[in-house]
Amino acid sequence: MGKPHVLVVPYPAQGHVIPFMELSRHLAKQGIKISFVNTEFNHKRVIHAFGKSVDDSGLFRLVSVPDGLEDGEDRNQIGKLIESLCQVMPRQLKDLIQKVNASDDDKISCVLADISMGLALDVAAELGIPTAALWPASMFQLVFILRIPEHIDEGLIDENGTPLMKDKMFQLSPTTPAIHPTNFLWLNIDAFPSTQKILFDFLRGNNRAVETADWLLCNSCLELEPEGFNLVPKILPIGPLSAANRLGNLSGNFWPEDPTCMQWLDQQPPGSVIYVAFGSFTVFDQIQFKELALGLELTNRPFLWVVREDITKGKHHVYPQGFVERVGNRGKMVSWAPQGAVLEHSSIACFISHCGWNSTLEGVSNGVPFLCWPYFADQFLNESYICDIWKVGLKFERGERGIIEKEEIKSKVEQLVGDDNIRTRAVELKQKVTKSVGEGGISDKVLKDFVEWLKS
Figure 1 (cartoon, helix red, strand yellow):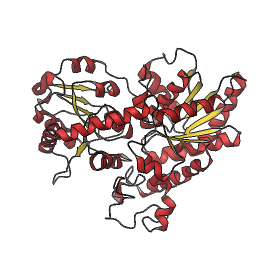
Figure 2: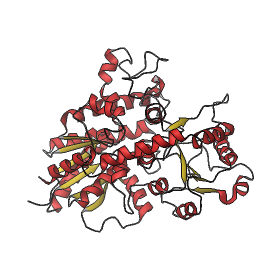
Figure 3: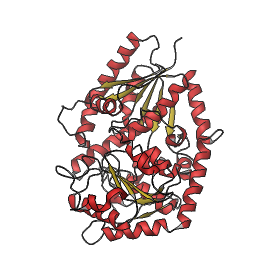
Figure 4: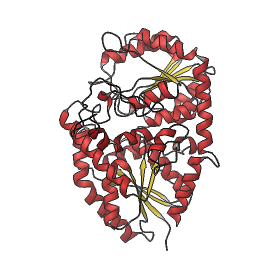
């Protein structure tokens, strides 16, 4: 009998790869062999971001399969990517498993897949391999998707996922987030109805995974989402993975981090810096980008701003005239930051965030208050958690032009930084979350049980 050997298959997006990488690194530390599957396109990005040094123990290796798209095709076209994955991925994964099993003494003993990659669980079932499924986002987002058949029966949406009550905010219970029908996950990722239908059908299809997997895990905790876990008790909390598991150099990022921002933070006063980061997908038009820059300038506070090369529509982002000279050393712009380390830093006052689940967990785990600027997917739901349920942040309001204006940015920063109650609640929430992943906490216990099962 060889070592336990887990094939790990995340959905190919930054926000999914990172928590799977965190969990995989933890499993490797427990002596479990990991083959981590990225698409070839993302595999190259991860290697480029972190060089070749992946693992010292020899238990962790990165492998890749094609996603079926050509070199120059746009992976941000979600409908196209999903159709391609569904066509090519099952065959590719099957071939990969057979190849690994033919060449490795330690045969694949479990497939750990994203619930969004139900196709990987189907392949494992066909080959008779035990399965575990992880949902890397909020428990409540998963509950909402699992209840699609009920939403149809109740007349909330039709068979194609189109909302039938366009203006009524939807809320399952007083302790869960409220969401506007236009912000349902499958409707706000892409404006094209054909893509929305592909995504809706894909999500519905993946719900089968929850019926078949041997283990169902979620990157969240009871302290953050008690009602979510009550609604589907068979799904178990193991998060926040980012709070339990400070990574070494390989974190699954698709961009090389700029370490100079840490030295810059060391020079700033405690609790003074606005940290601004919008994840891997958010795109601004030039008008909104410039308004954000001017808003940060107006705050008159030090700020660290993550400005990806592709953050604006069109060629390259252009700062307002004279902006860089005027802010001088008070503003630090980088193309990508080591976010976990940044949010832990004592100089951080608040986090202007797109409210992706990983960023939400990292902010919460470090007791940092939020200013919420959601862009798409589950980010509106997470904004509702942050502002309405946990009350550790504030929302921005859009002006008459439909953009968030510089005066609004300045005003909300002042309001948030001056609110001791929000800061107190943020620290209290951090303590609860830390307890959950600490020795004897519920997330910690579930993770230990899962490791034991893998080893058995």
